[in-house]
Length: 380
Image (cartoon, rainbow, N blue to C red; front, side, top):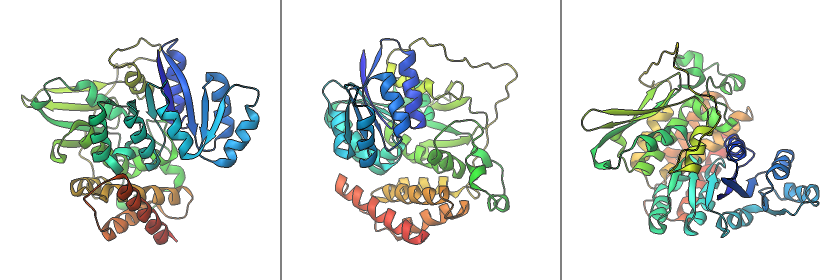
């Protein structure tokens, strides 16, 4: 049996992780659930899965939850200190980082320092602090198992002889605006941007998919996870979301991982690895399917090209890009800026940043704070 702490249990990935736990029988157990302030949902989760600890980022939410759960032997903690304690607990084997945004960086580092396996669904952690996170994982000999469907696909296709790998090919659905002109993109509304054609995801990642920033973040994540140069990472638009990603070897052979658009599959693989557990999830049916692939439109969706540039430059710049994007996307979700303004804000913040190349947690967090403040100024 593996014991888990789930960061972001009330989000899309967190809820699907708990569904995997429910289907696993006696193979998975919950130590801690962590959320921001979704009191109703996390109370339901706590009563169903019986964790030892529930942690709320919001102090008021933690206070109310204590009252709601007072009849159960569940400790309710709060804030970053509570999160750190939930991931370093000696009984925890694996930490599922399903929390959204840069906030996942500190608990991920703490979990690695405590020798935990990371099931990584938080790409912003590697975008903001990839060098620091990967060096800590190597030092502590802790595996980082990808949960993102694309990176899980690559992980499953890799052979032991990594030196024969020529490139990796990340597939992207193209989001809801694949093929749209710049004139059409100027008419994008929040409602349209939140309608992803294939995946059921949280609001932030859905908007990132619409701008293709999500794929840009995944390019940087792949660079760190698989130790690949940016010239060896290709992106193809694959609207059907059946081929989740591919790897190409130096002899021209290409291995692909295919499956339904169901995040429970990569989640389960990260939690069962190196085994594959039997499940009752719906199977992929190939009959009547047509699979197509296209070059990404870097003019209509410049976030992807920017992510390549930012990743190549490195230093604190990826953290700045990520932070500015989080603030700009939040402003769009609050209907304070237009869809096209998201990219303008991120580009402006990145262009103003004085990049530091000597990275530690403090410098990353300082760059993150500056970028958030500057993005907020541009929005206001």
